[in-house]
Image (cartoon, rainbow over all chains, first blue to last red; front, side, top):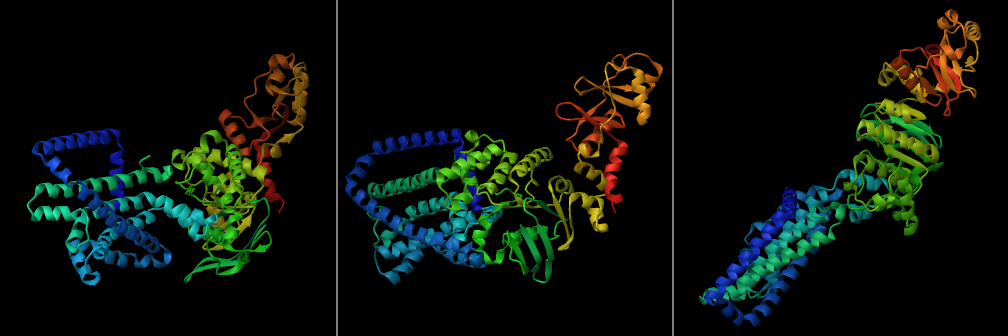
Length: 254
Length: 368
């Protein structure tokens, strides 16, 4: 269901007028916002933090990359295993468990993880990992289940081994939905990284929370705006992957 | 080529296929026919071991399939399913080359084979090779599905209602194309169908299944003429004799060496010829023997002169390669009881009448 909705949304995005209209609104909005900030003298304030921003943004992205890679590395194989004949019946139970990672507030998970891993990046990565895992697992399962059974029968009948069926038929036909899951997961991940600061994990959260504590809005914005831009950038990058990596025959965008 | 030896399949307590013995000779098209749930598809899928038999043995080309690795076995047998099952992520070319690629063929060899196969089913390789399945019509997809099964040139083909999902007009066209292909390639084919008309058209042998048992296994004509029991008789339909019309060519039912007159003959000659044969009309032929017209007995009796002056045009002629169904249809169309039969060049070869058709269809009963 979720996958179908994503596909529908992706199709809507594909309508040229909708796409160009949105692009225009976005650029106009960004321009107006920039002009407003400039007028308030915020922009020059933010630029004073530029060296902090680059350093912390790098840290921020590293947290996302590590936790995201772990989540993909675990979620993708987990989704594949849970759609195999032998393990299919465990799919519901396992997704319920994975679901806990999304249900329990990330702040709580990070706090709990801190009591195990101590202070610093590891508990933050663990918290982000649990948050990111569910959409990836769910979409991998949904994508693989959407592959029509007769394709698999045809592949078996022509003499493909189970591994060949997975690599040559199932994954190529599911990859669009799987990437949609990764896209959602990583966008959420980037937006949640600021919480890592609370347990000494670093990232742009450092500027945001310090800005709040010091009641210094420029510092806050110097953290918040790059965070937002990173989220948009990650979403865009994976969107491009979806466009170019998914075979044309099964790509609703092309 | 394919031999089933007391093959049985149990699904739990249910016997899906019950001790089936059957042999399909090389180059034959064997249609497995029956109502749904009769075991025909299960029987077919046991041949390439998509379904393992519970007991019994299956031999392909003299080899026990249980002793061949199942992946190797399947790559040596073409497989076509009703839903076609083209892989949407692959181009037409890559779809056709699935089995050659699995077998590790040289890429250039397999791609040129794909182009050649497309030409065989009247699809332009220049247009279709690089297309994706979603860019093809249903009929085009089905043609690609069939040639994909032929790509590695397997001696045996399994087809599970391959033309079931196509509209009736296209189905006829694709069936004809396929029969033409088969006449050339002479594959051994096991074909699952629930459509008696399709079976009569395609099969050299029909196997009728009911509740997992093979009830009758025979040529289409014998199945239609001599159904073994009430079930088969009912399944092939109360019009089964009409269906046999399709199996007999005009050439085999027509009266050969017919009487004929030439344009310059007199009506007296024509009348004598007709009285001699007991006919009420005679065909006029041209100088080299092409059917040109006819003279009726009442005209020949009443008038004087040459045939040329009193001939009428033929109400309908039929090609000797057509089947009797076409002949009968033409008779009804023109309201006549006989038709002149000509070959491809228009030469007069004989005539079919309602009596000769009855004779041809009845021969099988008189032999007993």
